[in-house]
Length: 482
Ligand code: SF4
Image (tube, rainbow, N blue to C red):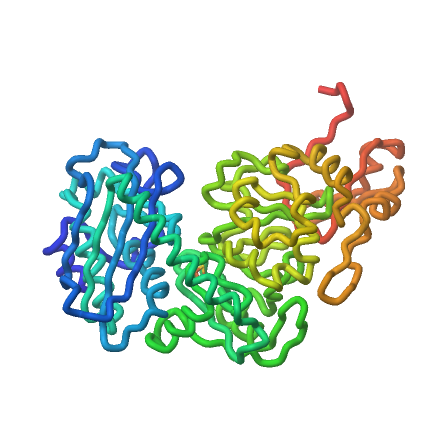
């Protein structure tokens, strides 16, 4: 659809340049879905084209005109599609494009996917004449049909009535679950090709998204099956196959083909990725991950919190939003990782770093949600905010349950001991050890022993392991000093 045509038909511009546009709270007319209200988006394949009212948008619930400025509303977008070349496998693929195409609409912010969608409409858009969600639906259908010509007919039902959204959400969740379960029977070693997805490169240019049978996309919206179907039907689109090549590390999940793809996709920023590692050459994370993981050096373990968690703070003192800020941007960040919920069900779940034996903390609502993925022997050993609100409490809890990190983690898959345990770690650092800290000198960096600053009896212990720290200014004072 040309921009001129869009201007004539709709009271808003439609252009890929608006992708990534944010609508801040101060400029927001209405918020739909998000953390405050239920919401979801769903695409359903309809084999009988006669059942589709092509281009029609039905709205159930209050429209923009009836909505109070600043209001929070439930939101569902259900699309039905038909076409000769279409198949059920493509439902998830088309669904994921809703994020992309709605991002083209000026003054309309669409984030996340499935039952996590978060939409905001700007005051400016309403001022310019946006009156109805039907206008959004019609524009979205036009975009889908222009960009994906294999969609021959498409209609949509948008819902803002909260009760109806909740009721339909149950059905949607069953459909999402059925898609996910299908993927669990296939493994990385069973296939010759993985798939890349470059959709999120519009806002995270170095992101290298690799979808494999054992690693569903971190946004949770694309399984290996979905990606394969997308690559077949839209070979010029964002999903393309990655021939696996040679397996360099079967436990970490490192393949020559993936490494080559990493170089290409990140424009040389990254040259290797271990698909099933947390701490070494981890998969990059854009901004769409369903769950953020964070390494907790004090206990040598890993914590997890998900988008939309009711838990306000993790034991490292940060909420999801702040953890997410460290994870995202298409970077390979040691110590932080974004994943899709389904990855918890993978038999290769961060197996390079010990898998579930390395998990020390989870937000309670996340732990409950993926409870059936947690090995029986680990269930009581993983803390939540109910057991530990800070590092000290976490440490006490882990000791009390004799968590594997306390005495050292042995990797289940090959029996290799990969961590030393706390006792050994404490022995490694003598109380008067000289610990080097990096301090800026001129334009470079100099290694300054902390003992030069604090004296040899300083009651200070700093352990930096594989650290990459950038500090503008660090002031260390003696107790009581002002
Ligand atoms: S997170 Fe990855 S798979 Fe999902 S849309 Fe973005 S690039 Fe594609």
